[in-house]
Image (cartoon, rainbow, N blue to C red; front, side, top):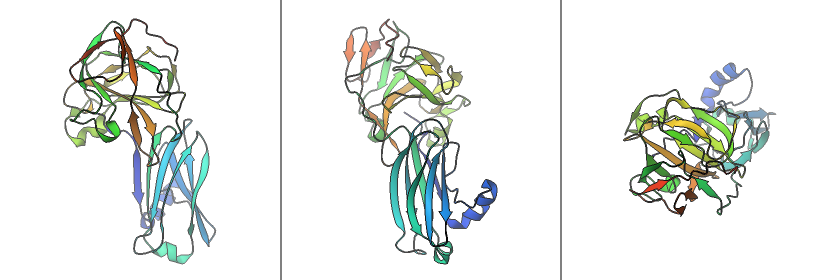
Length: 291
């Protein structure tokens, strides 16, 4: 099961803005601020423009909801956009004036890496995410009743001893990693302790590898990796009942979330179109497809 390292969600009201503005050294509503995303306000006294900035080099898709509640009736808007690396975009325009400051406006943001316009090549065949000649039991395949539903519908969990070599299933750029945690448990409180590698593919989808061991990431952000390259070591971190690797390919959605998509795998015995619970699949010795 994947622990939700993404998307990120921030919710604040205007009552909290004064404190934040002091920290940000800006008159802006920096209510959705982290290392990746900043949402800010430009207020000319009559209208308020909300702008979003992608602080990193890689595309993100975000969803922003502005709700005026009872204090500012009529203010309820939602917008979704993909923002490319180091770019800013205007999100929406709201009524300004003293009335808006007296109300309680809640701004919620969710974002994920990748483009909502990503067009996945469904004919592309992925490598199995482990070393050639080895095989591992599928704990959960596509549409497993245990936890592979909804966003995780097309994820695969491979049972692996801790420290097993994890390999890139497809070429791409490493855009996000975490390997500082060592905790794991079957409880939502352990969600945030998952170690992972996220690789952005050339078509705007992401390949994501979860539950790696502490200090088990062997690549760095910005690295270009090729299919078959070793990228990490499996573990038992985050929300997990036993050591395993969670792998899936995701497309960003308009809700600022990510949805797994079905992919096929190259095995030593042919193409696997739907990994099944309890089955073992031998990885081909051909470890570098260049794609």
